[in-house]
Image (cartoon, rainbow, N blue to C red):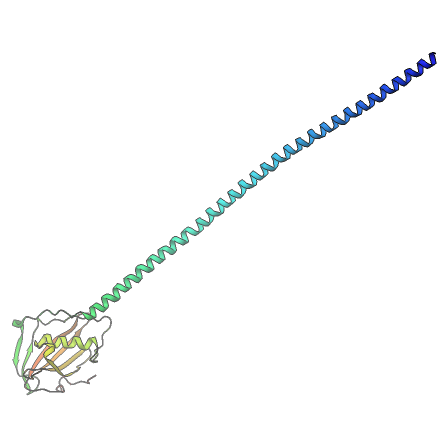
Length: 245
């Protein structure tokens, strides 16, 4: 009887131990799973936070670098652009100045020279002159250069289309009082360096003159002497003769 009881007791204890082992195993397994879950969540949280921090830091660094790059480009570009703008403005102003100068130059050539009349009371008139064909010789200290639109070094030009020719005719008209519209030019030629002599008449040939003119630098042609002739001489006298250009 006692043996049966002992045997039952051992079996009961064995079953209880088996149940405790299973329970402990389950509990340990659950605890392990919980610990693993905690570890996983913790790692996820910390690693995620670090990633966000790194991303923020990288974004801030990139923004800073972009701003510095833009500032550097603007700093380098601004002086060049301003300098180029100044050059363009200066170039435009220079172009405008040149256009105005050229326009002024053209207008000067087109404009008639204004001649101030000489004082006839100052004229010195003598009978005769360089040859028998001269009726009288007239010299007037109040004669002045007629002005000129020419610039630079001057050499007399006897081309009828030239500015020099036109200004010489004005000087002879000024000295004699013969209007150019009523003037025939019989001779106009060289009388020495920057000196000229010309023979002119009115169109009806009732007035005949030989006119001597000198070039004054920057001021134009100035009459120096007028001879009133009896008749036309197509060539100058030996006193005034020189090569006709």
